[in-house]
Length: 137
Image: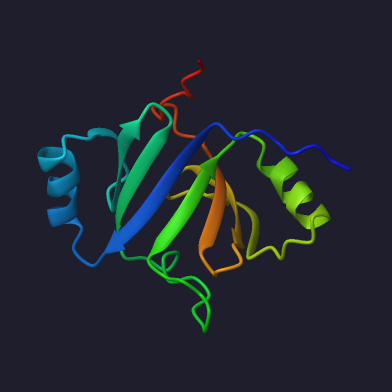
C-alpha cells in the first residue's frame, strides 16, 4: 500500500459574478493579507498555512454540474506531490474528476476529485514563486 503523500497548506475558493465587493470585504474589512493576485482570483492568508481564494465565476467553479454536485466552492489542499496524490487516490478507488493537469493561466499543477457529498476537492501545487512557503512548526 502506498503511503499518503504530504499536505502543506489549505485553500478554500469561493466564487462571485462580481468579486470586487468580496475582495474589499476580505482584504479591507477583515484585514486578511493579500498573498497572490491572479487577476480574476485573489488569494488571502487567513492563518499561517490557511488561505481563502475569492474568484470571478469560472468554468472550474461550475465543473461537472449535476444532481448531488455542490457548486461554488472548491476545497484545495496544497502539496508538491500531485502525481503521487493521483496514484494514491486511484489506488484507494477514488474516481478522478480531472487527472493531473498544468493550468498555465494560474501557473498551477493540479488534480480534481469529489468528496462523498459532491464538493470539488483540488490537490494542487503552486508554480508561482511568489506563493508563500508552508510554515513549519
